[in-house]
Amino acid sequence: MFDLLRRSKLFRSLMAATAGFTFYGGWAFLINHDHGLMVALKAGATQGSYSFILTLCLSFFMEWLFQISNQPKWQFSLTLFTTCGLIYTTSWGVNALAGTPEILLTILPGAIISSLYTLSYTLALFKLQRG
Image (cartoon, rainbow, N blue to C red):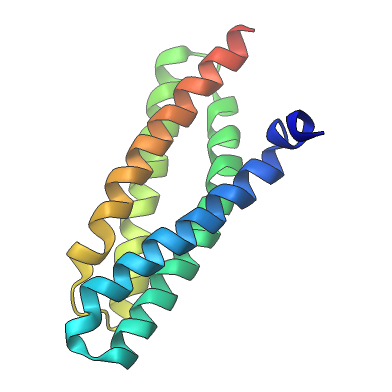
């Protein structure tokens, strides 16, 4: 039963999304705590919710991008750079709209980890494609 759930794209996405909410929301809360409890809660809720939604959708988006081309060089470049660009710009924008004071420090861990996640997922797609 667990193996079936582990192979489920939806299950993996939900687990990663929950971890993203907890980690990134907690980080945003901590980094903005010096600006007051309400600001920190708002930053934590903003970054946590954004991270949950982004992580949930990210794997489906990468799967789609990967299938656009059958050229390995383009599959890799398109999937990795488009996904990372989307992550960086939307994360900055969401936090700017929410009035998060320390935007760069708030999104930096997410940007680094999301980049590594995107790279790992893209490489895994290559392995799946090769059978």
